[in-house]
Length: 427
Image (cartoon, rainbow, N blue to C red; front, top):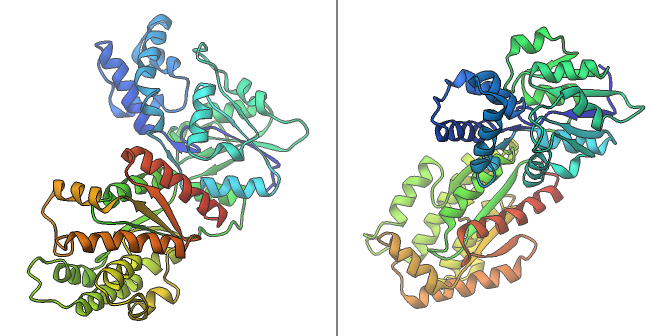
């Protein structure tokens, strides 16, 4: 198998799965024009080629109508659609591994140049690339061979990776090898009939062709912490989506809970009818649930290369039972030995918010559980304890201002997390 020192990629269907956004914006334009929406197998043909060309070919439009449809498409695509996208698994790691070997990397795509750059930047792929070629907004047609030539370096053994027959033909017209990305949007029969040099049925197969022997994915353990009402559940869902869109395999979980035994304990410890439960019993139940959760879910998922995203972990016990219940941080650490002996998070997002504002938000949503029913002094002490932990573990705990708009909280949290993950080689 030859070793290439230049790799040129298509974008849609090769590096990213942009189907949701393209489908939604294509349908939006057609409905605004009062035209019928084709069935899915026809819509799939819009994935890859220049948009106006697809409107003319598959919807019978004139060039003038196609230009208007393209403007309508962008009416939704510019604010929303371009982010309705997802990096394929292992693609980020592949680009990183190739870049580390000194391979020249570029993108040649039928998607407009500025939009392609925005997408590549948003999803963290642009830093790996040496060049990007795409048509400008005025081009209704884009020849793939010409786009490839724009980024094709002289004197290097190059290969084009793409998911439609036009990508393979463009490579052939430029005299370079090609890899058919069969996991993308193109028709496999048409792709293979064009005679690609190689074919990859999955992103992992593409890795095996271009960079055999790549390291297995690394796992990473993330926790979210903060007082009741600070928005952990909202941010857990948002971060799960952002990480998944970046191409990571994510396992979202929670504490207490996350596995059958721990969920049973959750029902006991959070019940408003606690039967006179002591603070010690509460702490021991949390520790027992955590030990089972670690063994059954967290450690296996991290070992398998997944990103574990957990709503609360041992910091909550240190704060709520160790400080607020007055049991002492050292005693709580001692009963949570399974966590401290190799099960601690790689990064913790601390959603920082005044306990007064947090409880106001929490009480506006639903009835509080047993712990949330504790008094004002209890919740004030939890806020103080979280601040102390953030000072004690600055390398692990990342404070984020949770009083901002939810989208801004997500952006800040994800930016900090992604930087930490790249630093640790989690790609």
